[in-house]
Length: 190
Image 1: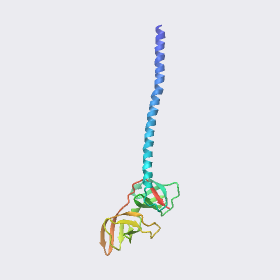
Image 2: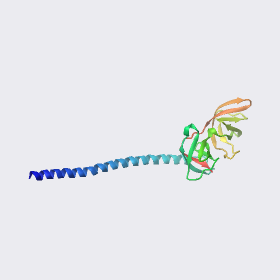
Image 3: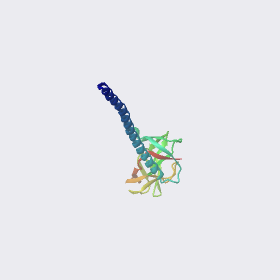
Image 4: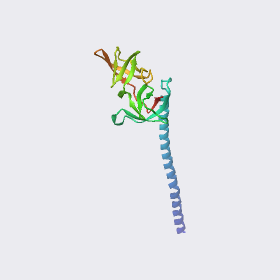
C-alpha cells in the first residue's frame, strides 16, 4: 500500500511538472507578444505622426512624391539618403512642412545649406551661396526668404528667415536660419 501511495505521489508530481511547464511557456509567449504588440503600436503611432506632418505640407499647388530619409547626415556631410517607391531624378526640390530643405542628386538629398539658390525677399531678388544670402537691395532681420522661380526650382518655397544683415561694398550680406530637417518623411517635387 505504501508503494501505491509512493507511486501515486510521484505520478502526481510528474503530471504537475508536465502541466506547469506549458503554462510557464504560454505566459512567456504572451509576455513576448505583449512586447511585440507594444513596439508595433509605437511604430504605428510614429507613422501616423509622419503622415500627419506630410498632410500638412503647405505647398498644395505642387505635386510631390513621398520619400523617406533613410540615412541622415552621414559623417557630417549634409548628405541624406532617400528611399521612395517611385524613381527620384536629380535636381528636384525636397520639401517638408517648413519649406524647401534640399535638392535631389543620385537618390540622395543635398541639404540646402550646401547649394546655390536664386531667392527673393519682399519681391526683391538675390542669391543664396555658401551659406550667405547676397542682395543688392536692403533686407531686414526677420524677413522671410523664398525661392524665386528663376531657375528649375519652383517659386515661393520658404527657404528660411534672415537672422543677421551686413552691408559690404554696396551688397547686403545676410545670414539665414534655414528650414529644419525635422522629419523622416519628405516630399520630392515632381
